[in-house]
Length: 74
Image (cartoon, one colour):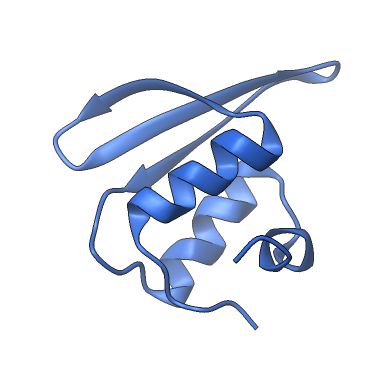
């Protein structure tokens, strides 16, 4: 089960554990990108105090990360 975390915590996990890099930020949205053998993968994380579960699921879907894999680092 995904817990509510902040956008900042989400970015930290995606960068430190899944190899994403911060590409840019515009307003409260942080754009992350990772190069893979299949091509580039990107996602956008809103830098909010608390991400709603649906928002977090969308971020992980764009990043092509299973919820179970992400939960290990929460």
